[in-house]
Length: 163
Image 1 (tube, rainbow, N blue to C red):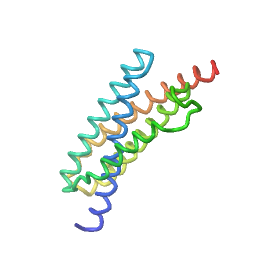
Image 2: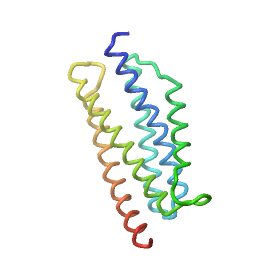
Image 3: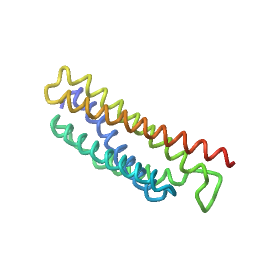
């Protein structure tokens, strides 16, 4: 494997690990959110993140890049460890929990969008990468970012209005 492929493999495996963590976080948030409309929105985002993960796996396969299982496990463990964050409460969820989780999820989607942009740049010289598919993935990430930002702002307003 040449240096470019080696580096790209590391890069995409890191994003793959993040996609597992992001999917788990979005699913958990959807299950625990008190507002059914927000839960539904988060369920849809979780499903899209899972679809994006499948797209990433397909891209890695096309590029003959192996999946590094230890990175996937590390991403899964990172999401579980993030639940232990300090939020001012020991036993139950703080009003800050949902706000911080939305911010973490939004950051993950920003990272995913950056990866799609990187791959889109490489598509100009790599025939195994489909420019149109990457453009579609970028558009979807943009929609996810806008939706998560709306939810984040709503949660920030309600969290600090009642604090």
